[in-house]
Amino acid sequence: MKKRVVTISRKHGSGGRTIGHMLEERLGIKCYDQQLIEMIAKESGFATDFIEENGEKVTNSLLFNIATSLTFAYNTFSQERMSLQDQLFMTQGRVIKELADKEPCIIVGSCADYFLAEREDVLNVFIHSDKEHRKKIAVEKYGYSPKEVDGILNRKDRERASHYRYYTERDWADASNYHVCLDSGMYGMEKCADIIADLYRID
Image 1 (cartoon, rainbow, N blue to C red):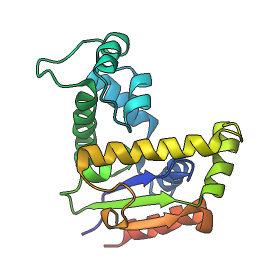
Image 2 (image 1 turned 180 degrees about the vertical axis):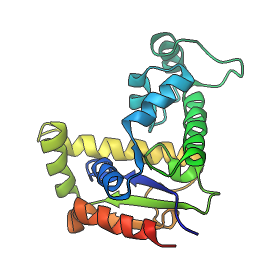
Image 3 (image 1 turned 30 degrees about the horizontal axis):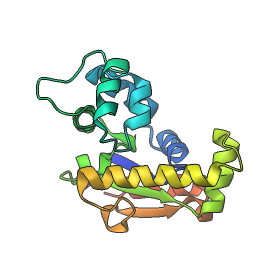
């Protein structure tokens, strides 16, 4: 079946977001990254800062849930008495499924591969690269301190892996969860975008 949607999961600093926007230009379909966060914020009532900080990590603290319900959301706990983390996850899923139904698109992060697992018209991609390559990108593009970048990358990847496992019961970095895994350090981001575009166009 011809693909309609591309999901991109990525190790922090591997250039997954950049590849997503390169792919947007190649395929002429929308890449949802920051705009996805804004859509989730509108749907849920959570502030974009809260979603950016907690959309890909698990926080189970009761005090955290109480504090953030007052600080970041327009409303406190929902009628279902779900934690804010669970509310956010369910809203992410609803928005992602609606996007996939609405139009061909590229979705970066937010467990999109999991939410769309039952669809046959989705191409799931995982972008990674070696630590030195990711450290270089993180320092140059994100402005991380060279002394702190190693710890930041480890923390970000650990948070994404824990979040993914908590909600999906699957291993975030397991190649069997994706149709293709690409090393952006080896191939370069432009070539990765070319490869994904070619795979997307296959009938």
